[in-house]
Image (tube, rainbow, N blue to C red; front, side):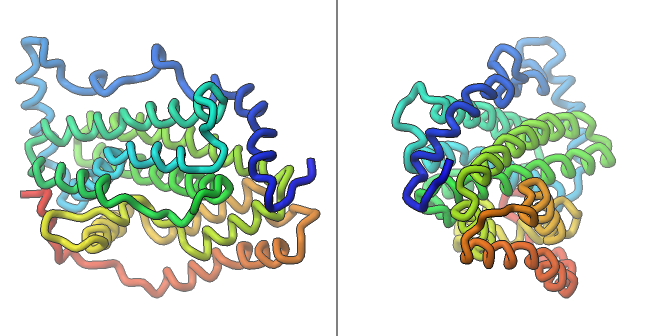
Length: 325
């Protein structure tokens, strides 16, 4: 199906059949889904206080940086209402609430919503977090809003979510691994379940882009290039603490993540490599001259990013978050 720059709507309509056919595999039924209560002490039981005590004892072994990263991840997950609202601003994705696109957006949001709920309750029970400070950061993140550079373009949005979901999968999975090494097997299981969701969601969003490349390769390539030139900015970029300017808290958060290897500049580049391979960027044909030039930029970008990353020192622990007493 040929497509032009003005045919985003036509392409999305074309993809509805693919999405409708695969929706049951992309999303899990509520009846078959895990819930936050599955992983935490049950307040109805007489064993509740003993289980909370055990949780708190294990949480004491989490390092400062690991706890800071876990809090930042939680704040990001809890800002989920922003993400659904952002998707509903995209052209032609939600005009019909019964359409496959609307069903996907709601289902994805509902699955993601459990992540913040679960992590928030864990942190509350751990006794290691100033919950009011953390809650203020969550309110800031939702209240301030964010601009991810996608405008109202679904092509750019799908590049962003393909990238972001892989990044969150990596972050949650590694936090879980470090938690296990620290002796907190409960937190490790929590993070593993969340990472599994993120990995599945990443595969879905990547499949959307793959399908768009089949019918509108040049415009999809230009959208991919544009997002990479802007850089993929995580939603947590706008995170802040009470009394702290927007952006500064995120810098300290990423420093902590890099110090313990949860998410680094190398991971950012590795994700790009995986997208280039999964979308078969090097082998696409039928591109316009502009799209072919965009492809050249994208193929050369990983090596450029690695050269920059190699010169970056590991940041030292010099900042204390208000979230942690």
